[in-house]
Image (cartoon, rainbow, N blue to C red; front, side):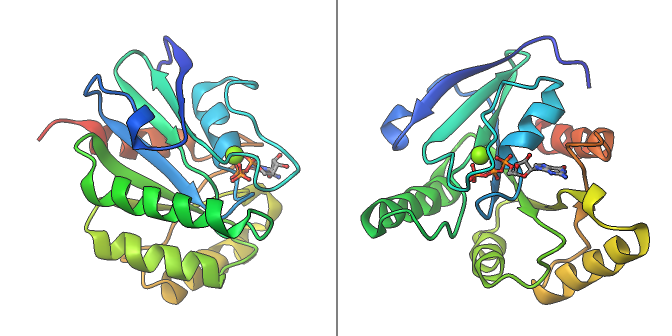
Length: 194
Ligand SMILES: Nc1nc2c(ncn2[C@@H]2O[C@H](COP(=O)(O)OP(=O)(O)OP(=O)(O)O)[C@@H](O)[C@H]2O)c(=O)[nH]1
Ligand SMILES: [Mg+2]
C-alpha cells in the first residue's frame, strides 16, 4: 500500500464531530493498550501520527486519520480501561454502539487482541456484540513479536475458539512491521465499493 498522505483531520467526543465528507471509514477497536494507535502508525509508516503510550487509556476521543484523501482509519477509545470514570465510559459505550450500528461510512471494524491474553472477558463481550452487529469484522492478533512462533499459533487458535470467531485472527506486529501487507490487502477489500 502506497501512503501518499496520512493526517489526523478530526478528533471527536461524539457523533456530531464526525467527518461529513462521506469517505469510507475503517475503525480500530480493542482493549486499552492492545496497540491500536501503534498499528495506525505502522500502517502509515509514520512514528508520530497517532499517539501511542505506555499508559493505557491514552485515546479517549475518536480520532480520524485521513489516508490518501480516500478513506479514514478511525482510532476508537480502548475498551475496558478501569480508570475511566463511569459516566465517560457509559457515554463512550453508547457512542461506539451507535457508530457500529448506524454509520453509513463505516465499512468494517478491525478488532485487536493481544495474543498474550487470549481469553479476556472484555474482548469476549466486545466481540460478541460486534459479531452480532453484522458489520464486517476482522480480528487481529497484535504484538506478534512478543510470542515465539509455536506459542503464537496456539494463541491464534485459542482466540478464535474463545471468542467464536469464524477464523483465527491475523497476526501483526507494529514493532517488527510484520503482517502489514496482508492487513492492507484486507482493509482495501473492505473499502472497495460493492
Ligand atoms: N512489542 C510490541 N509492543 C507494541 C506493539 N504495538 C504496540 N505496542 C506497545 O503497546 C503499548 C500500547 O500501545 P498503543 O498503540 O498506545 O495501544 P492503544 O490500543 O492505542 O491503547 P489505548 O489508546 O489506551 O486504547 C505501547 O507501549 C506500545 O509501544 C507491537 O507490535 N509490539
Ligand atoms: Mg491509543
